[in-house]
Length: 213
Length: 386
Image (cartoon, chains in turn cyan, green):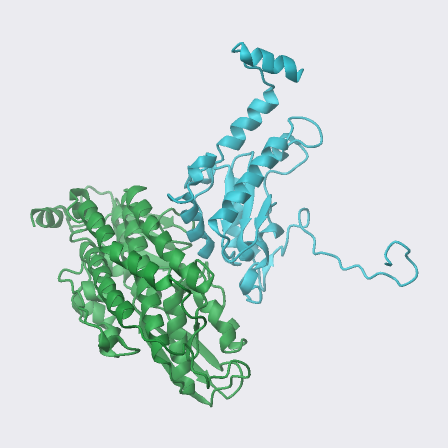
């Protein structure tokens, strides 16, 4: 639709929009997070919802205790191997469309506790993560920034085509493997459809022109 | 006291299976539950609405703190202690520093002791305000009391941030002193915050103390007897609410606490209401200590110049350093074999030991009371599971 015509119509009191804009506008302005804290970051998450930082400005203050009513999972804190199955199960229970913020160093990679035998080295091994916020713990401003990034991401999604959200793509899974406590470690140790260990590529000297500088 | 007698009368301890309904129901509360204060799980067996058995399940936040610390240098463990009880990092730092100072025989300069007392008591203030906020949240007063508590917490966190550079994970204490000296104007700001604190407490008290719903929900609920408190090793505000006169600040005379005049509030019933009141009263005493400490703080060095930061190897031996943390007796037990990292590193977590009597307090109560009792124990899972 022509932008000029649109502004002209709005001056006449006629509001026009596309279904996609309306749909995305609704989703961006009412992200309901799951009321779910794991460790230290949860305290900063609570602080974000309190008076000074006031997450309600972003339409996201409705923390739901049940995953069935939540759109967003904030993985706030260290995910241990005992807790990882529950986190994945909670994610599976959430209705689509759903998003994940990985809050803090521990949820991203294990953080300071990475060397621990019971600590999962990043929740993105099992569930797809949309936004990562580094920090130990991230400040409330960082969490607000993550919310705004997520809103931008939702706003840019289209109802059809390549850039459509996951739940509108029949090929994308909505449930992910729940790891089990195995003999030595969680089994499987990762969901290989969404996470692969980073490959270190060693450039062959002289064989590749583009790799040299 | 009419509410108390009413509550006692309504608690019928006869078994409810006279009608032939003797089916027990087992439910799992947690690890994802809005009121378990983190990832804590309780397997509760219920007869109707009443608790028959309660089995706590720990370990959902077991982050291998002790094992990691045994492979770290002594100073390298200091940031990890912040993450033990993440509501009060500075007192954790303090207890660990105290243990290492005992182990290595390090003296702490006067000014550093004052800084420790000031930051420690500020930590106690913010822990107790937030605890009361969370307790009210668990009771159903969602929003207002917690908002008030966090408003006050932010003001104290601003002080921590100005002093240490971090809101929550302060990593401030060092062996033989503190990391940085007070920035310009900090003390005046802190004096203002502390001077304004009693007004906040008055507001909080007028909001809560004589609230009828709160009294109904907390009086005579989760009564911890003095005998059980002593035999189970309960410490901190929890024990004092049951009338056990045990405050390590008075017992051990550690640091410079015997220079300050302060009282130790004691409860008489040991119920949830007493535990709530003890924390309110303790905050007033902390304000007292803070005012005295900020008045008397001397000039001088903040760290013992003889302490080695690099290549720190204490002589073989063992030491146990403990302080009166906001949650109770927080202790660190260290065994040194002369190497740069401790041979054994053990934390005595007040949260975990105070949590051991949870089943005793909950038996025969309604499900809704579990949440209130758990809230009044004041646990942080980072410390329980470590």
